[in-house]
Length: 76
Image (cartoon, rainbow, N blue to C red):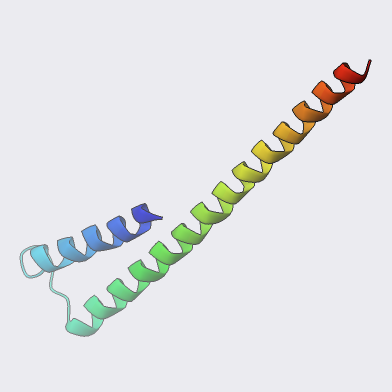
């Protein structure tokens, strides 16, 4: 989640530092770029949350399966 925010902040600071040296952007273009970077950061964060949730479900299912195997072995 933090990587999306850090990447947006990094690109934003690079735009402000290098504006006028290598390229020239109007304020409207800067705001558009910042908006798109924030949207990218939000989508990346959502992707990370979904991916971590899937990993947790997989771990829980594995624990349930192993507990079932142990219970079956104890009953025999």
